[in-house]
Length: 128
Length: 202
Image 1 (cartoon, rainbow over the protein chains, first blue to last red):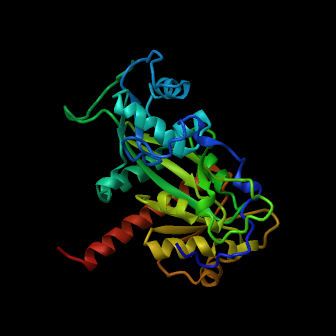
Image 2 (tube, one colour):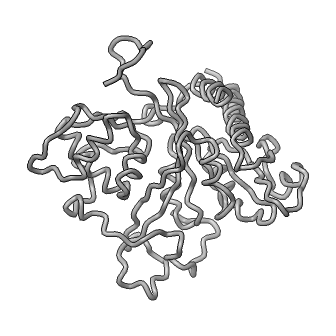
Image 3 (tube, helix red, strand yellow):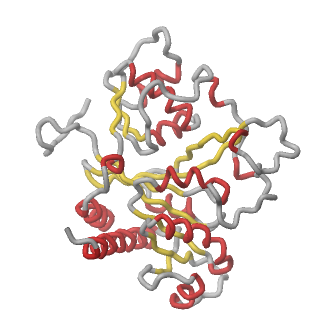
């Protein structure tokens, strides 16, 4: 997309860009999940208390199942495993294909939220 | 496993609804500070990976061996109720990461544009972006020590904002102040929805 005010001479890499990584080593080089889209705030829940190692599942898969005993967003899973979101999406796709996790997409994908959500947020924030 | 009390109708999935609000503004303006001030945990960091093929016009001189770089986003979580979880995402500070903004802005309830009166121009791109997208936003002027204080109408004029856009002072380090900003944003978003409904009656 065209970006207003973007300078073409801008340096690509700076301190803010973070470290150089080889993020897709854990996914076996795959860049796209086998299933699912996985918004940053899609909520992930494990369907079982634990999974024993099996063919096709790496330690990161098992770590996600362990982490998602409590509901986590895709962003939280990525942050806790210290992996890029793209790699997490691939791993979650593997787990979803095996019915090891359930994923709930956010409301936005099903249309705009109604007013009651805004009111609930206002009341919830006031009560904090 | 703890299932707790549930008032959901039978058959509904036992998973809350997730929603998000964006915290935008220039680099160093206090986005992560505000996320941390209201979040129930310390801010977490997530990264998106960019590949060299997406770099296009960017100058890669000196980094030819580098095939990927990452964009970091800090975020926090507020559990509003059993049924509702609010995520706050600080947007990446640099303009070149717009594609991440598009993903972040999709489905967002609204955005806070944090401004620093010493570097007011830093928040122009954020304002342009949310105006262009039709995302409800408020401008929160983070009160840094040593910065001259301006009247809110001066800031509003300097930013050439639509008169309906709320502009307020805040201290991004303070929980109460940051809460107030978020509440103002949600009230503003509701107002916009009402006026849009009036504009297009069924």
